[in-house]
Length: 119
Image (cartoon, rainbow, N blue to C red; front, side):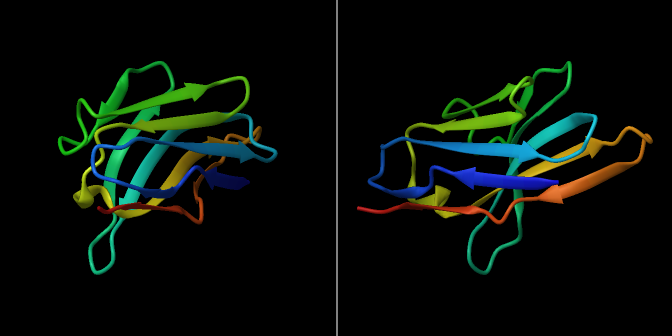
């Protein structure tokens, strides 16, 4: 299973970015697609996710500013980030929980894409 993230960059406070995550591999289903972030010297923290059949969930710190979506056909997820703040600066990582035809499950992490919010 491979995850490829893209869309990171440098923006001014108040700006926007859209991150993309694409999953590929011999899995049967993606049970959950999530976004996390990790800033230097800090622990990895949950940002947003969509569990199959359920509504999106967000960290309180990004509620109302970020929007997560999934394309179930293409196995992709988008994270639209608006009104970015310097505190949003971090490496953003995509995470999936996949199920294989033999019913085994696997957690997979992407390598991350850097988001820097600076004036």
